[in-house]
Image (cartoon, rainbow, N blue to C red; front, side):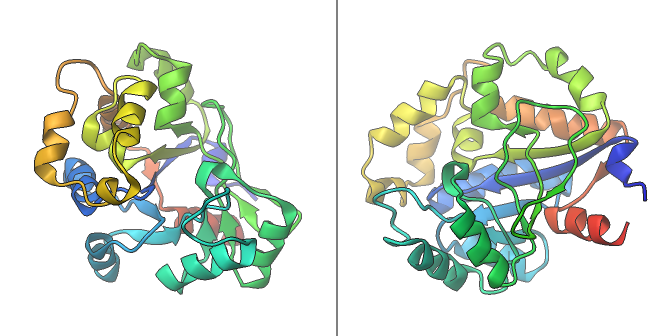
Length: 252
């Protein structure tokens, strides 16, 4: 059985919303909305904007549980999963905040009928393919995460990335609305903005505040994500949602 990603690069665009405000989420999405992408969003909280897009089948909505200490999702693995399941009752895939997982978490999700997980973040590896976790869940690794790429290549020189993008394998891209909205030039930039606000203020940050803080002078990771989308489009490479990757793996 041969899968499409074994012969050429196959792209998938995903986003962890990480408690971003509605203004940040919408601003980030609108930057990319002209590219006709079906983005897979992993959510930490309810977003009326994303719920509306999901109801129109313009995006896929999955969950982004936080199992770390002081989580707003709950004090135990079960509480966290229950909380997130209330956000997206029909979710069949997840990605944990900070990619945290242990076997108990994976087994719980498998028992609840989940089918796939995307918790393994690589350093832009080539020839990435899905693999089965011991729980039975299909693990769909990440090719590039925006924050990780800022550390991997602080110059954001797209030419350095092209040979890896051209190689066969899954190219799951994970971007965060805050990095897109603020056009993060280095990891400390948006981290310092977020840390300057309380959790409540961050979750309600308005458009005018966002635009005052947006990086407009330096090359930022927003450009990298846009360049990847343009690269995939101009080369007519296949772009799949995460659910579509799962279904291709199941059906061949």
